[in-house]
Image (tube, rainbow, N blue to C red; front, side, top):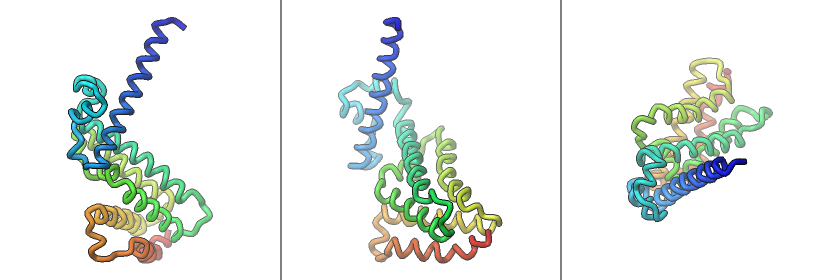
Length: 198
């Protein structure tokens, strides 16, 4: 292999490694201090690189958050797929497993979840909306509702679980002493009969 090709390959690997490092540092700052503390200047200082180096990899902070959000969607989809992987389970079990996996991911990854659902990515917003829809569409594809009413019930289940995650992040749930597991059970119990007509 020519030396020029080896050098190009090496540079590409170094570039990818630095890009990954930037994303890792941004996530770490967000987890500890929130997304408002994540700035290009702060990231540059943390990894001991100049601002132009960071900007040579990312257009702006919004692009960094957008990419982290996409990683979050991929991770959430993996966890949801694992939770409802069997076709032999009954409808109620599948719905409950989906809700539990979704809630668990959201509560255990608040900074990532906020990047996924609570940040503005400027020109990437439409692409991010497609990712968010992918999470809901996964539920629709798994359950295969046969009526618009059943499909609406699935949307309401997703919206309720998303709301519970958001309230948990805002520390609003603890004040009303809502047991999340009991809430998810009651949520699924309430909508399963309407969805079962699939």
